[in-house]
Length: 381
Image (cartoon, rainbow, N blue to C red; front, top):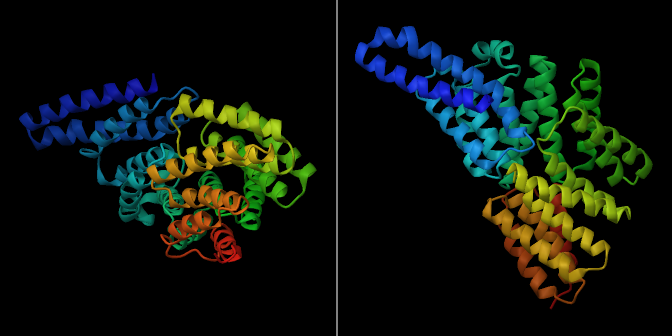
C-alpha cells in the first residue's frame, strides 16, 4: 500500500507537470512544487520500511527508485538531499555500493547544516549526518579504507554536535558495522556500548537490538562466550520484537562465524540457512559474500575442506561482482589460509598478492594486517 501511494503520487505529479507546462510558471508554483515536496517527504518516510519489509523483492525497490528519481526532477532543492540519501541506502542494501556512491555524494554536496538541521523535524534524522555514515559504508565496501574511516569519524563528530538521538543511533550502528567488517573488535565494542546506552535511555528498540548484537559479537571475538551469548540473545529477541529485518543477513553471517569458532556449529549452520532464505526473500545482497564466507568457515569447523573451498570461491565471485573489494579480501584471505594448510602455497601467494595489490591504504586495519601477515608467513617456494 505504501509503495502504491508513491506510485500514484508520481503519476499524478506527471500529469501536474504536463498541466503546468501548458499553464505556465504560476501553475507550477501553485501545484507542482508543493506536490513534489509532499511526495518526497512521503517517500522519505515510507521507503526505509519498504526496504526492510520481510517479503520485499528487488523489483519493489526498482519501482520505488523510479518514482523517487522522478521526484528529483521537480522537488525543491532543499529536499533533494533526503531523496538522494534514500536512493543511496537502497542501492547499498541491494549490494551495489558503486551505484550508491553518486547519490550519497550528491547529498553531501548539497548539504548545508544551517539550512538542513530543521529537516530533523520533517524526516526524523539529519540528512547530512546520514550521508556521512553512508559514505563510510560505501567507501569501506569498495576498499577505500582511509576514506571510510575518515567519513566514519566525521559522521560521529557531527552527529554528537547535532545532539539528536535517532541520528546518532543511526550513525553509531553504521560505523559499528564498518568497524566489525574491518576486524576492529575494540572499536566495534566501544561503539556498540555507546549505542546500547544511548538507545536504552531514549527508548529506540531497533537500534538497541543492533547495539546489543554488535556488542555480543565483540565479546565473543574477545573470548567472553557467556556474556557474548547473553547479549546476542537479547539483541536477536529485540530485533524480532520490533520486526527489524534490515541488515539481518549481515548479522547472521557475522554471528554464524563467531559461533562456529566457539564450537556451536549447528546453531551457526541454522543461522546461515536462515540468511540464505532471507537473501532470496528480501533481495538484500549487501552481505551475500559474507554469507558464503561464513558458510565456508562453518564447513571447516566440520572438517569439510572441499565444501569450504567452494564457499570461499563463491564469496570471492559475489564480492567481485559487487565491486566490494573489502569483502573480496575477507573471502580471499580465508581461501588462501585454507590453501596454505593444504600445500598449495603458490596459489595462496598469487591470490593474496592479487587482492591486496588493489588496496591503496588501510594497512593498519586488522583485516588487511591479517592478509599481509599471512602472506609473509608463507614459506618461500
